Image (cartoon, rainbow, N blue to C red):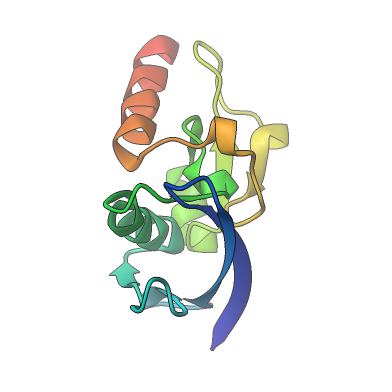
Length: 134
């Protein structure tokens, strides 16, 4: 079974384009874009957050960013969210503070461009956050 979501993508030119994403609702996890610059991007992974990171890595090569919670620099799923919900929810993390239930948001809901980072920036923030809480 698949679910379709339309997500906004900020292109390097500054244009915001809506792109349809097809995602699996069960394992194995797959995420695929519709036509994007004459190609489709397809990614598999352990969960949908992993798939999103793989798609983002491809888009970053073109200077494009997906405008969703899962692409925020300070967003990351817990192990339980990845296992139980296939990475459909992420925590919005704050340095030095543990994740709280009220910080849990839908991975694919829209987020503002100024809060979006690269996959590398997001992973660095997560590692820094772990160290800040420990």
